[in-house]
Length: 381
Ligand code: NAD
Ligand code: MG
Image (cartoon, rainbow, N blue to C red; front, side, top):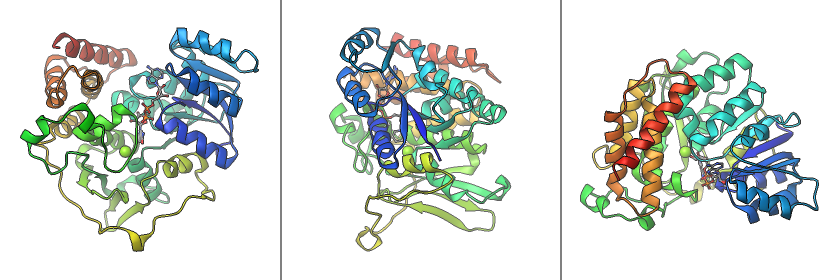
């Protein structure tokens, strides 16, 4: 059970919900970090009195330092300061709730400092999953997933000491806002359409990833890394209701699932209280009021990003870092109204074809692959 936490990305969707849970559980907060949202992090710092607040944007950090001058909170700016926030000695747990590859270095720093990682930042595991998992094993740092599907699997695997008992993992997928449409219809969808997710309210990048199904592809890779399973033991099932958060099929044919309301505070809470479960004031899922639960196969023609991610997962090496870097860059361009919806998949596929894959990559190889993929996408737009 965590007692003192640091949050990387405290102003975002996961970060804010983590603070709600921390308040309910009576946890102390050692460090808060964000990119540039001065007003929001100031309010959080006043409420939670951390020792350290970091903004990676240097100008915003100077502004924050002035605003917090009447408090004992120390303020730092710049990306390197994320590593300081991730390694403060008084924190036992680091919640990685930043979006994107920027989470990689601070996550590795927190692992070396033997913190529990409550991991939401899936891009880090996608790009450098083997490095991260090996470092965690070598340092004895626990990684507890926050992503709802991976938390469901983590919960279903409690008491399963031998991974050979697993036949396969089944990740459920809402299908996103464009489920059931033809490719011609999906191709006309705009930024506003993509940002309307049926079941969850999340940051803009992951919301677009849910519309393309890249999010599910990234989650396949995330599951392969977390549970050290090959691609053919991780499958995806469309489940529109987002009630069954994922399942494990064991070799005797038994299926275990975790069900709940679509509320990220539940997996966040479990990552913080694990291996215990705390009292939760929220209403649990009402099975009698629940819609009928349905399951279907995903359509990899209409949603090619899922297939692209699975191909990268099968290839290994730096292929997933290229996939992720290209996708992050393309989603940024889509959110800026610079490219269309299917350009995300097209540019990601082109970057994968253009950037060579390195086997058994070092951290520098991963960072180089990410940079090459981003540069490629920018060069095409
Ligand atoms: P968000 O956009 O709402 O918040 C992102 C946070 O990261 C903000 O605090 C922002 O300040 C910070 N940030 C962004 N760019 C940064 C940079 N360059 N340097 C430093 N900090 C930066 O995102 P979110 O929806 O909270 O998602 C966060 C992570 O959690 C993502 O990896 C996402 O895939 C994962 N996740 C989110 C949800 C969800 O329900 N929101 C569910 C599962 C997994
Ligand atoms: Mg998820």
